[in-house]
Length: 270
Image (tube, rainbow, N blue to C red; front, side, top):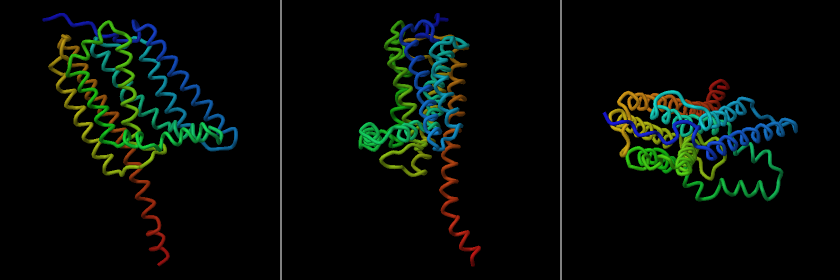
C-alpha cells in the first residue's frame, strides 16, 4: 500500500496567515450582520432573529474549520471542511438574507443605489441563472478532485486558500441561485431551480462515488480514509441538498397558497 500523500492542510492548523485571515473575515462579517440587524430593530423595522441565528451559524462554521483541527483521516478531514465551506455554511448564510439586510440598513444614497445596481446587473443576473451557478459549483469540484489540481495544493497554503475561496464563492452562488431570497434582476421559476438542484445533486453524488475507490490523481490515501471521505461527501451533501429542496418546497407552498386564496374566498362567497 502506497503511503498516503499528506493532505494540503487538513485543518486550519498549518495554513498560518490564510487560515487566520479567513477566521477574522468570517467573524467580522458575523458581527457586521448583527450590528446591521440591531440598527433595523432600533428604528422599528422587523427583522426575524432566526435569520440572525442562521447567518451567525454559517460564519461560525467557517471560522471553526479555518482554525480548529478536523477529526478523521487526512482526506476525511478535508471532506468535512468541503461540506462546511462549500455547502452547509453557504446555505446558512443565504438563508440569513444578507443582501436584503444591507439594502435596508444602508441610508438612501450612493452606496445603497450602487449595491442595488450591482445585484440587478446583467452579469449578476447571468451568474445566478441556476444552471450556470450549478456548473461553477459542482463543475469546480469535478475539476478539483478528478484532475491533478488537488495534488498541487500540497505545501502551497495560498493556493489552497484560493481554491477554498472559490469553493465558498461557488457554494454561495449556487445556494443564492436556488433559493433566490434576496433581490435579483430576474427571479427564475421554481421548475428550473428544482430541476437544476436535482441535476447538481446527481453530479455531486456521482463524484462522491468515484472517490470511494479512486483517490484524486497524484494522491494515494488509505482505503479506509478514502471510503469515509466519500461517505461524508455523499451523505453530507444529501442533507444540505434536502435542506435546499425544503426551501424550494416552502416557496412553492407559499406561491400556491397565494394563488388559491382568492379562489377559496370566491367559493365561500358563492
